[in-house]
Length: 213
Image 1 (tube, helix red, strand yellow):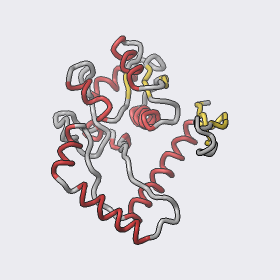
Image 2 (spheres, one colour):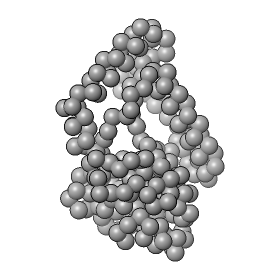
Image 3 (cartoon, rainbow, N blue to C red):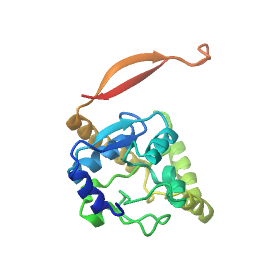
């Protein structure tokens, strides 16, 4: 299998036989995997891992058949030949792997998935501080040296927006994946407290375990 269409045909002929790796139930790599399997019309078993290295080992050994991961996480393995990139799920090709087509080029535009990171401030931060931080961050992201560093790592800076625009992006993403989680039956089944080793300084936190029904 050397192309995404070949892989999809291979997977469709093996209903329930193939499996794919993620970095945990409910993680972005899990949701991206579900987006892809639904769009491609394939049936594969989800295998969650605690960390990326464990999933790499299982893929190299052939016990895990594929994964949908962020490009920075797998770029080194793709470049040294341990893994083959079949497609990127972003709207455009990545400058880091310009010869790898987008999933939309294979007729699956609904399988697009962007994994992104952003910078947020605590609720109630004065608007002038938010605007000042936003301006400083935008100016930093415009620097060629930083953009080049991102590209070498397989990442790109997103199109410039405003604090309000970023808020809308988060809200839209939340609604999109909330719908996916409900459709796939991904549910929280356990809640427990976890505390910092320094309990005098840090309050307890809550961890939610998520499972597929």
